[in-house]
Image (tube, rainbow, N blue to C red; front, side, top):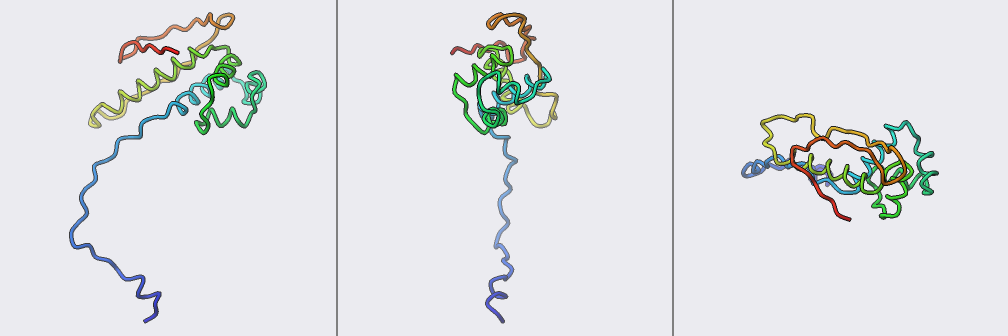
Length: 149
């Protein structure tokens, strides 16, 4: 018998492994939520990554990484990207906060209820200069969320 054959022996456990309860989905990362908001808004406006990156004066590869949640952008970069999309930083953070609340609510619901349409996406449009965003926010099932910067 060769060494290779002996190293491939079957292992029979003496007792069965304990059943592992299904794990809850991982806690969402803030960078994923913010990136999702930026990408969703850019796509809702029908704009390209190149167009928004140029308007924000940040590199296209970096903006792409921010949108995909691969980079943790500074507040200056986020504000520039938001302004390029006709939003302000508060809008982006509020939308990311709403998404976080909806995901947290989904994590705490019993699994027997099934998965409903969690985290509906909506777009915020600017109606004028930065700071005068006309966004109607529907009532949240978790109540209002206050984000302070």
